[in-house]
Image: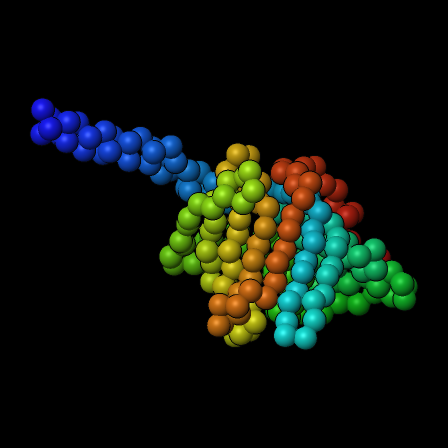
Length: 202
C-alpha cells in the first residue's frame, strides 16, 4: 500500500511539473519577436531615467516611428529630434533654431527608441529570453547586446507585456552590469497612420 501511494505521489509530482510548464507556450517568445519585427509604425509616451554616481536625470516626451519616414522624438516640449536617412535633425523650440548632425552620432535618445531594439533582434547572434512578473503583469524579457564602445550602454533588457505584445520598459546596463538607464513606455499604439510632414524639420 505504501509503495503504491509513493508511486502515485511521484506520478502526481511529475504531472504537476509538466502541466505547469505547459502554462507558458514555448513558442510565445518567437511570437512576440515576430510581432515586434513586423511593426510598421507606432507612437508612445516615453519617460527616461538616467542614473550615475552623482545624480539622476529625468526626461519625458513622445515618440513616433514610421518605417517609411523615420523616427521623431518630441522631448520635454523643448526639442524635436528627427532621425531620418543619414542625418539627425534637431529643432530647438526655445531658441527658435534648427540644425542637423551625422546619424552615426551615438546619443542616448537614439537608444530610447523601441525601433533600435527591434533592429538588434536581427543583428544579435544569440537572443536570450526569460519571463518575469512585475506587479500583476507578466513580461517576456529580451536580452540584447548594444553595439559600439560605450561602456555606459553595454547591454539592454526589453520588457514586453505578454498579454498584448506591448513594449513596456527598456533597462540599460553598463559594462559592469550596473543599471544605468530605465526607459518606460506608455500609451503605446501600434501600426498607427502617421503623416510624412511629422518627420520634417522646418
